Image (cartoon, rainbow, N blue to C red; front, side):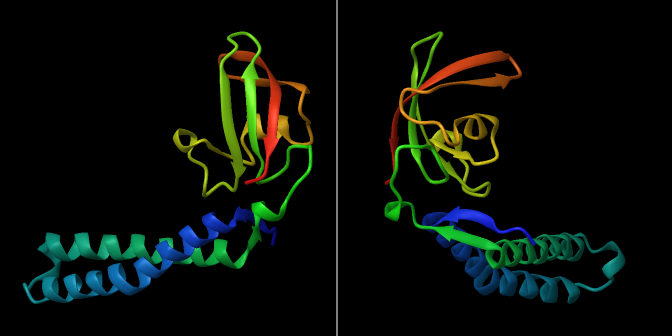
Length: 157
């Protein structure tokens, strides 16, 4: 099995979600199924079927989270340094065509949130940046065409 890289914060978020599912949502859905069973004929009981469907979703998500946490390779970004772009780096880039600056942190797949400035290590732009240094130019082939960027700053915070 391949290790899944994630930051300390991403690992903590997955653990918190798992705890919430196991200690709050799982008991609530078990109670809802019990209440729905008391309403009689299960074949026509919409509450029962909805609760069972939600239970299936919760159990599936618990298994998924446990698997990801078991395979997690937690990387403490604050203990990293260097001049080249790697997992965990916060990179400031400029679009060569528009002069628009953007800052992204390269994180694990489950942590990615573009609105929050976090991109997955597997995204095309992150893959194009990996191993580059300040001043390097790279190209990303996007659905709208090829775009060129220059790396302005690499930080680990």
